[in-house]
Amino acid sequence: MGLVPLFIIALVEGQPVRALVLFLVAGITDGLDGFIARFYGQQSHLGTFLDPMADKLLLTSAYVMLAMTPTGGGFAIPVWVSILVIARDVLIVVVALVLFLALDVTRFLPALIGKVTTAVQVITVLLALVARISPAFEIPALVGVYLTAGLTVASGFYYIYRASRMSEGPGPASG
Image 1: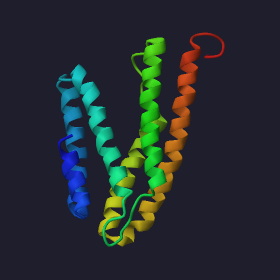
Image 2 (image 1 turned 135 degrees about the vertical axis):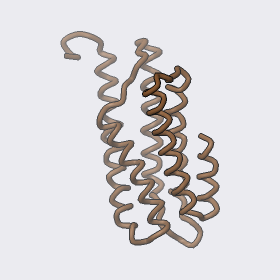
Image 3 (image 1 turned 30 degrees about the vertical axis):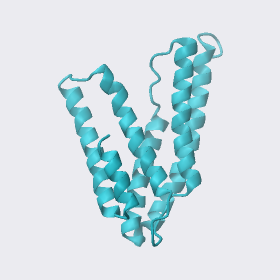
Image 4 (image 1 turned 180 degrees about the vertical axis):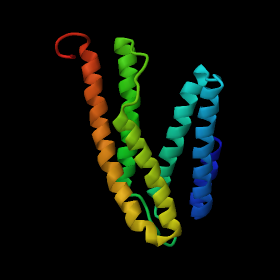
């Protein structure tokens, strides 16, 4: 979480190389932290909440900031794609909260499509940052943007479908 403000400042100051390094460092240290916690059995209840929040904070910040055209031009993620990414995350949180409050569901596990979507969202951020450094990466970044949009919508609908099945409870309709 501590690197998020530095990442935002780097983008505001028009320093995509620094922003890319900070994004990579945040991702690598997050992965190492999770691995070490699991390997040594040091997982905590607080960590299970803070880790995904930190991930979402970094990703949301990246999509908001990369939707802004940098001074002097450069690659920007379309605002509508950033809105889709953020709206899907809000949808997932709201659905999980409703399931908890209404049905006492305490675990709303991620689906494969959700994990793939998040991976593509991260790759798209990386490509967008690299495209700000080297315009040769604008086409791959644009492909990533459209893949992100499609997967984000598909996974959002999947989570809605899954939540509706969970709310039906046991019985013939949920089998």
